[in-house]
Image (cartoon, rainbow, N blue to C red; front, side, top):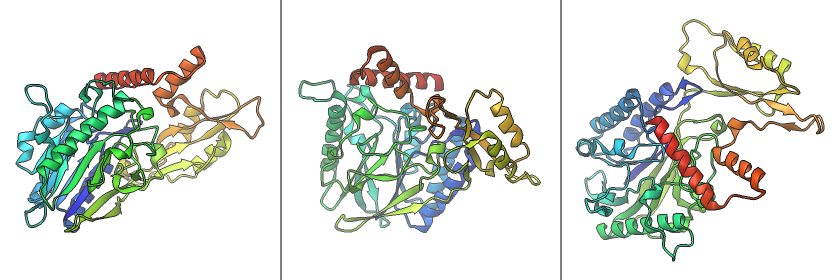
Length: 415
């Protein structure tokens, strides 16, 4: 049986008001072809389908258009979708009855029964091979918000980590109950595991922040494969190749331009042994940085910008490379942005970031300090403010409350 694992599409994403629609369309077209060429039996999408909880009609059109086309071309394809921290669980779940007719099973959030208990039966999804036989069972666990976790217990060393551990233990128990001899066991998640490499500029902190990174031993040895979402760099967890983030299909910030974006194809044999193939995703739009490393004084930088290719004919703007520039200054230069924009007039590039570096007046002339507010996370700002006022590191519960507040504010702004 062949399973394709992908994640973190972030449909509707933009970079400095530059739409990513062309890149997403290119990816979805490519993915359709891969599903056919690689004879995929099941597709697992592990969260952050959309970039916001209130996606545009255009983004939703891309999503539902993809699902309809996939079913039309591959009517036996099973598709499992879980919600991520960027998604609205209710919005993903709303068309469930319709999508089930297309063999699409969605768990935008934890499914609850009328009495308030979790419907574990809804969490378990069978996957069929090309002969129509059930070969795998999936515990489709979505992003777990703090309200989804059990009440704190005196037995819990950490309410968040142990709460997530309890939810996964219950899901895996339901998975084992549903499975019969010979079924492979698959678990999904949209969360942060210890040791994972973060992209600080585009990955929103979840639950209690990275101080609450989950341990890989949440997953017992009888789990065949763990399909994860949230981290944009494709990677394995805890040295186990069977626990993997597939990563995002496109760079979602300038910090991700050197990532190899890919999908994972998992082959499950009759003995439920797996082999994993990482298939690189073509990048339809380039990312440029001038200079490639470090920074240049403004005059040198402007000369380099003058050398960029000019617009010729009716070139499609959506295909132009994104550009980050890093000027070095020794004193305030209020008109710097205008100078850069003037140098870029008529050039076939899209400016997405100016990373200004300042030469520290009291340090040696070779020491460059380039910390900018938009290069550090809200949590880092909170920690720095707390240290400056109280001369110490904030308690973990303060950081947890701060990150939960940030998430609520972002959801309200997007809604």
